[in-house]
Length: 113
Length: 112
Image (cartoon, rainbow over the protein chains, first blue to last red):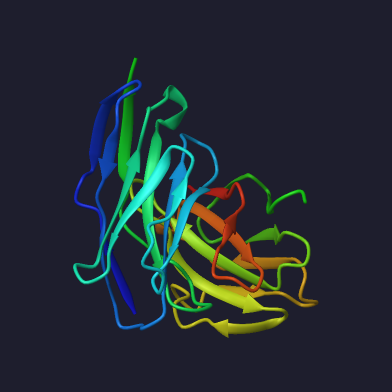
């Protein structure tokens, strides 16, 4: 079983600036995966980035990167050069194996032009 | 690859009626998942299939909820005797052999 906590209900950032979204998790699995998903208003959930727990190297996808601290059970998302299209709800999620994802409550990201 | 599709996209029903939602996964994805998302919350896992086998159903919300995937392709989620508390977005996702799940657009249910 997993629990995922996102302690920032809302974050705001100026366009072109960098923002970091926080996530902590807990799991009884030894082999698990962590994800960040983006959900724009009234649109579908989109995968942003994925991290395998057994990999020490932090995942990176273009302007999106994670800071994975396994011992601290922390998995934050950094968005560089924020763009207006990044405005959305961001969800952190955890899964062990083929089971269903456990999501946090989400962080609403606002991009100020 | 056309992505995960869900139908209908919106459903309005009266309390006590039965509703059925359909999900078509990405072709060749053998795993299919159902989630419920209420306003202001993250999705909540309900059940999943590997091919036609339902491998987890203990988290279905009540015995009014049931799901099928008869031929290992599309899946249906049925809610019997709907209640106002069932109003939510119902999401479907699929995956291949990795844990990465890809989501459909969801079906928004409103129970009056």
